[in-house]
Image (cartoon, rainbow, N blue to C red):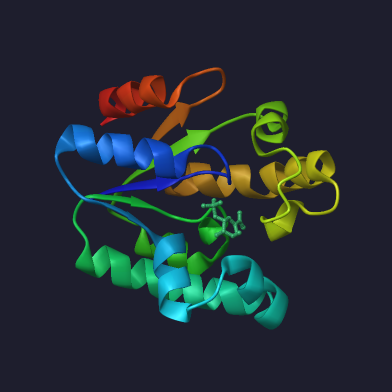
Amino acid sequence: MIVLVGPMGVGKSTVGQLLADRLGVGYRDTDDDIVAGEGRSIADIFVDDGEPAFRAIEKRAVHTALGEHDGVLALGGGAVLDADTRALLAGQRVIYLSMDVEEAVRRTGLNTARPLLAVNPRKQWRELMEARRHLYEEVATAVVPTDGRTPEEVTEAALDAL
Ligand code: S3P
């Protein structure tokens, strides 16, 4: 199993699919599992039930996916916030796809479908990165910077890092 972590919009899904193709394995994404399992969007779960409830659902989704899947698995950008989820990643190959704040603002823009960026993207990105960077680093067995790189270049770098 190869697990991809990193902030929203860093390219976990795109790179995850490219990586899975290159390795001839399947690709899975816990955000997709959550939407399918709950029958509603992630934005709706945040609005209706709140972030703590979403994190609890996400923890179960990560646990299930790690048990069922053997390929490339992308986690939601905030999955590492949960200590139990971080513990589930111990012993896994975990690639942290990183990007700096300005790259993040440029890539995600004013995308209000992502509930955590709806008000002031630059300020929210700075706070998110400060709060999470060390958590990504804690779970990662390799870090692959994505700034200024195409998904194909990031995929090559991830393969090199394996
Ligand atoms: C989140 C990231 C999203 C999704 C949810 C919360 C976060 O996943 O799980 O909106 O807290 O960073 P992506 O990283 O796949 O966008």
